[in-house]
Image (cartoon, rainbow, N blue to C red):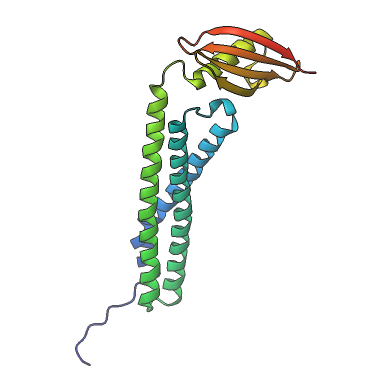
Length: 205
């Protein structure tokens, strides 16, 4: 014997205890990321909810990209954790394999933190931007036109379809189609105060 002390290999329980915090973190952020992606996707399923200004669109795009990074690296981190447990259970005396996957869990968790921070920052910025947006924004014009058409047709807003919008010098021109009648409603909403200034109804051939 040369007097050297040999460190016993880590047991599976020790590995689980040492990485349980990161495991729970990766699980929770995976769920959060998927929920966030679902929320962004739901926003884009209704054309009338899609922001009209480029800045707000880019905020959503960057926030969505951050959420994709969160989901992707959370999955990879959980995979590294599973590999870590497998290597530890099969051969706990293999320090290279244990260190490789332990570092993988740590590094993936760090990237998840960065992606989550980016997503939260741009989501919050988007929310503040929408909160202080002027009342005569394109989105509010669409909402005003939808309410007007729904009132005229005695239908709920989910039964009329947003067809498009263009902007001129002093008004937003919003078009909705009404499937029950086959008609199109074109509504002019003033940029100055958001009031409906003109309505035209066209019957489809």
